[in-house]
Length: 358
Figure 1 (tube, rainbow, N blue to C red):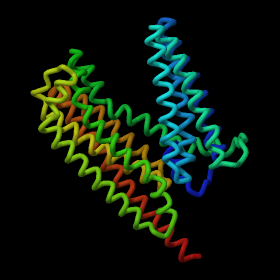
Figure 2: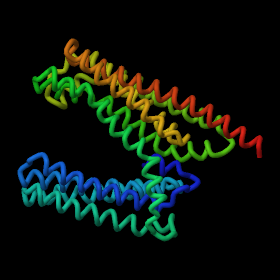
Figure 3: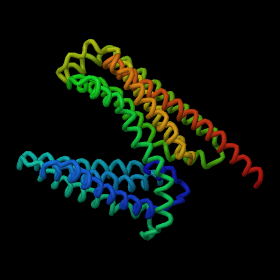
Figure 4: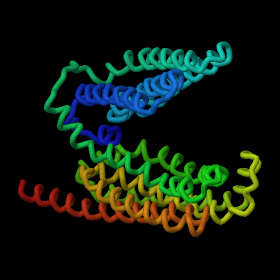
């Protein structure tokens, strides 16, 4: 919903609608986590820790709505300050409590209290600078908002399975635990690409929406083109560093012999670059308000990713898993790029027709 909210420049939905819908989904999240713990048969202590972690993460979800409000108003810097305060407060509280009590349950509980205080002290005093309306339960608006954002939720959920399909195949066909560990070690640089790309993309999302909503629709393509170039340059840079320093650094950091996996590392880094393209196109499709079509790309890629991983991992091991990840990201990036192009052309024609009719 954050991407949708940040690109809602005409404020079709009020901040009250976004906040109320998030409170509702947070309640459902906690209920679902308790139900999951109950079904899993965990020990009382483990069950309590899992639920406490879910409650802690709930503040991430709640604060995200406030961050969307700040970003809508061109103040993403305020969101950064809010996040830094809450994370720092809760992290220090968790570490100190754990050091003094040696009790994980107590540390989690104190971290939740610290997160709540950090969240309230900053956001509840700042948000009125950006929203002066009243909070109310608009059932029809909330229902519609949840419905239009449902493809984004389901798609993000499916993306987790797409990213982890090679790992699931490793668990199934390569039972030795160190294979899974090695794959995770090699995957880290690929994750870094997407992480840094997100730092570039997120501040541009609202700008992209403003450009699309104006008469400068071609400028949107220029912005996306520049962002794609940034992804390409970042990927090339990480590939170069990975080739010369990746294996020695990862081997030292994880105390593991990864010397024979340089090719797998480079393949995963390339896959990370395509993953960044997927993220950019995801934002682009959301800006065009065609988010329902992302489900097509996710559904097709998920089915293919499971098949590709099941075929390549038993034959190729970690190399097969690396290739499976790369192919999955290439397929998803291609589908999303085509989807964006088609939706862009259609939206541009519709806008021109409306302008001529007016």
